[in-house]
Length: 231
Image (cartoon, rainbow, N blue to C red; front, side, top):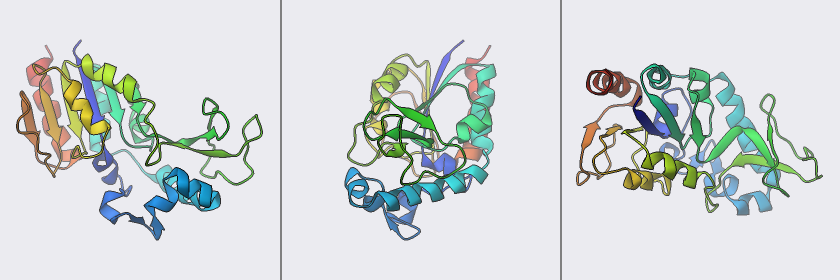
C-alpha cells in the first residue's frame, strides 16, 4: 500500500465556514492576531486570549467536514494516509481520518503553563481563568502561537521522507516551517498541489498543480490517484 502524505492548510477549513487569519487581514472579529496568538499577548491579557479561543471553539463545534475532508478519509481504503495539518480544528477527525499530525496544536485541548507535557481534552467550548492543571497552574490553549517552536515538525519531516505520493491541499505554502516540508520529499515522488492561489514551485520536479478550491480539487485528485497508483 503506497504512503500518501497530505499537508493540509486553512483553505480546507475555510470551506467549512472557519475563517483564516490571512483572509481577515490580521484582524479576527475585532481581535488583533498579535494580541491573541502570541506569548506576549497571553502574558499581557490571558483572559482576552482565552475568550478568543472560546469563541473559535464554539464556532468549530458546529462546523462540519466538507467534501475535501471526506475524500481524504475515504482514501484510507486505498492508501496508507498520513495527514499533516496546519489547522487546529478537528474536521479531519470528524470526517474519519485516523492518522493526523497537528503541527500547530489542537483547539479542543488545553495544556499546563507549568508543564507542557500535561495536556487535557476540553469538554465543550470553554476554557477560563481559574481552570488549573494538576500542578496548580493556569491552563492555556494547546496551540502553537506565533514565535513559538513547532514541536511536531520533526515527526512531520520523517513522514515526508517516507512519502510515495505527496499532496498539498488548502495552503499556498507561505507559512513556515510547514511550507518547507515539500523540500524533504524525494525528487522522484509525485507532488500534487490543490489550491486556488498557486505557490511559486514551478522548479520542483514531478509537480502537478490543480488550481481549484479544496473540495472540487480533491474530487479530481481522488480520481487521478486511484487511476495512477492504486491497483
